[in-house]
Image (cartoon, rainbow, N blue to C red; front, side, top):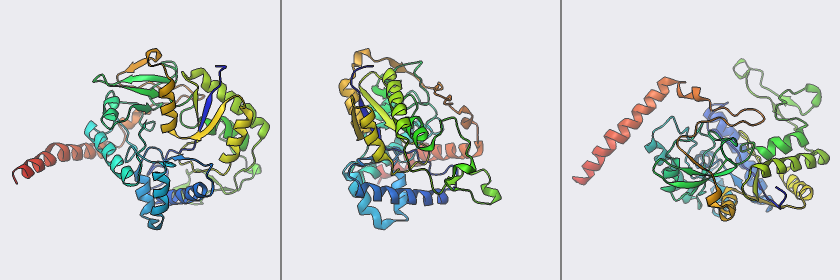
Length: 366
């Protein structure tokens, strides 16, 4: 693609409420993350927006510890700089029933709306595939786009496509990028700042950075933390990498709009993002470079895409996505911790099929 492109640099994260650490430890990290984000966004108007992984519950978890910061968070959400929702939490779409997905979206909308704005983009990259009724579920909440990469690949379709639901509902879909939700981080930031490729996971003590790890048996498998991470950008390598990324994304896109995203697992605002945005404008002088978010990007893609030329995908989406390393679907999650899944299914059934119908009947009878 030789025509001018519009590069959307998007600051985002993927935030598991509980994953490598238990809930309370994860919340400690969430508090540190949002403390930093508030400071960065209030001090730098050029840091236009941050996407909080399409969830609303992190805001509640944070305010349970920092209630004094509610007004500051509310200002950022109302001004559409901090994007939350439409989900309440990140669901694995094949582990719960359809009604639970509806309730999740309903709660997410209520919480996000109470803070001033609901992100109206169907952002579901956290589910290992997509069920066939996601277009119908999203449309019911006034959402006409879906972003995911688990369950679709560029062998199936270019970056943008039409996702047709089981009932015939069609919405605009996007694979986000050739490297999922973190193409800017792995394709540009990591090599230009860390000096490492995506596949290079080894770290030598002589590299500095003060690697830290707690000396406790129960934390033996935890990740190391760099207390003094690199803060210098290799400008020559940055220019090479950002041009290569631009060309790779342009080859898969159906419009001029390309997403450059920073959001890997538990990622936080990075002080170098402002400098990297400026370096991107310098390296891609023939393109337009903006700092934005998913709502703006998807609105621009919708306005420019030729709906008649987009490929239509339908049915359950359960294919792996080849990238530099294949992005698996982890279908084994369906059979892990079966006791928990059984109890969850029981709770869904009892509440949705027994308790609520009788409660409604009781209300009707006075």
